[in-house]
Length: 414
View 1 (cartoon, rainbow, N blue to C red):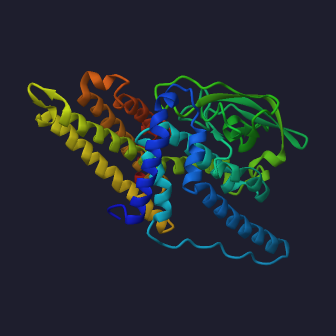
View 2: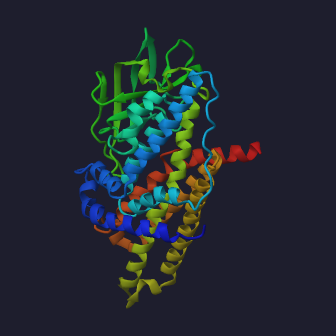
View 3: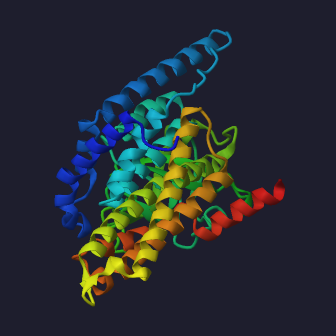
């Protein structure tokens, strides 16, 4: 795949019109925290039938899982899972195009959407029981409810598991949860939160099992903070979570067992991999918008008697932006092709894509600010917002330094 096909271009143009009509007029309200992004996202889902498609896919999957469970109950061999076949990548394109277009204008909205319908729902859909999926996952997949995925703690950062202090203690058939989380996307507004902690079973902390529980707003002892102030991504509400003796039943333990086949750590790592692969689409949207704004500014801004686009140093900046755009777009196209072929990236490949895309977006956005000069430092000119928003791509979903470690270790193992 080397360019968008006709169908994908139609989808892109339609999404772009939606963003122009529904998002751009509200950027200031979203930036200042006066408007949470969720109603606009729900309108996006309804406008393009994304909610209906999610319901249809969910229904078909649940029918297959019920059939498999019934077969096992009868002592029969469950049917083989349906193999994904190749195609033109339209399904993956439909997923990534809204991400790209939203990130041209308001990247934080993508973070809010991705954590809710991506990370939180995936944690339940990948490891939960049928009852848990039907109870919580569909509402997240359709954006009917807002989800959060809570792993980061005040003292952890990149060492998410080693420094984890949040605990689950057995109490009869229930568990008592305690601890705190920070930098949690959607934390202030989440209806459903996947809370990751360690089982307090008397073992040394490094040997304790990692468990995930599903919490809901308003549960006794569960407090969600107001949105935190931060450098960028203001349209993505971020908060802290506090748990003080929150009692939950086993029905809220994902998988309803402490002994998932691949363990809680692997489940959490799988969500990291998914999140990293999506960063390239976010980066592409930021790069495209910065480049478009910079080209227009270079044509119209006159200094020393001529447009600044005629100066070689400005041309160098534009050329490097275009190189970054082409490279990141090719990474996005590769993601679409792999999805169409029914394959996925390894953790090292996803880390490499995330590392390059995040750095490229940050460099392009900062160069756009430089190209605009003093104007670029003012919030009136949109490159200022995009530069602030781009920086977090190098931090969340694993810092640049963590990506480098994953890539290098994989290469050395080979």
